[in-house]
Image (cartoon, rainbow, N blue to C red):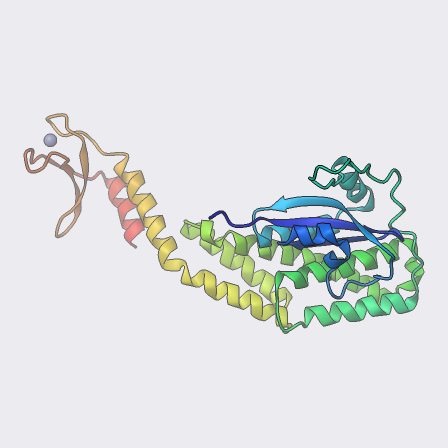
Length: 294
Ligand SMILES: [Zn+2]
């Protein structure tokens, strides 16, 4: 059975702010867009919401990743995304035209209390005891609101809050990269790629030292370590195949193949035992082989 797709979507409220989230149950959000507002999303006082953008994703991490990407789009690009691909319900009802001029998303008035509340939320999320992908989405959402507030009323922010905003922008990049890495664990088939992934994970982990988020990163690192035997075997098989492609022909013009003797590897005729020709490996092939087994 095909796995069900996930969706990244955008809601537009009647008072003009956007909500970006992801779901497996698009039908539910289509029926009642208000159900698509994630718990903890701030500024939910609007009278109604409509779905304005939907994009399928192949699985949950991909949907979460896309959500984080969309949240970080600058305002103009964000609106362009919706305008170029406005969402219409795929049903036979008469087509509902997309809203002509979506209200400005950034017209709300921010206060110091808003900023303090967002800051508190950020702290809460980064110490959340679970690290479901949703936490990243929430952090990203809070950051986007803080940026929006900053763009309009920079005077509400003190120096420390501005630094925090920058720091968390950087951390979001790392978390997004982290999700990307985790999603690709199964695709790693090379020892060198494995080493690169471990190095990158360690760097990411050190940025979150002491936070709950660090534990999730450490957990994924262990999961990756468990894949090491598979990765080593695949690296070795790839190396053997590369040497095998250099196989010579025997004196009788049969293709030869790698064989392992009691002391060494050699080329043996593929027609063995009818043809008993053998050849030594070249020095270079011996070095390649030694590296695989080393
Ligand atoms: Zn032969």
